[in-house]
Length: 69
Image 1 (cartoon, rainbow, N blue to C red):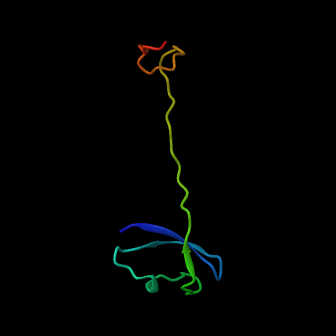
Image 2: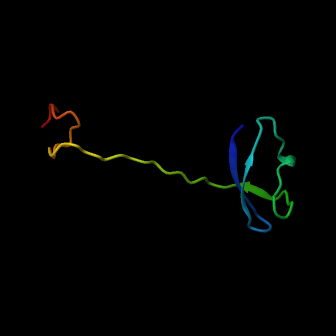
Image 3: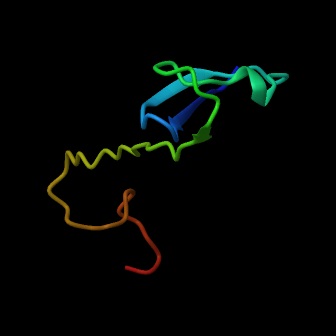
C-alpha cells in the first residue's frame, strides 16, 4: 500500500496516510481535527549522487576512454 502526504484544509496539519488501493475518499480524514476536507500534498524527495574519484585524472569520462575527448 502506498503512503501519501496530505494537508488538512481546515486546520493546516500535514500528515502521511497509508492508503489501500480500494480506499474510499470518505475514509480519509485529518489525524488532528478529524476533518475530511483534505488534499494530497506534493511530496518532497531527494536524489543523492556520489562524486568520489580515486584517480587524479580530471577527465569527465568515467572510463577515461571517451571517443569525444
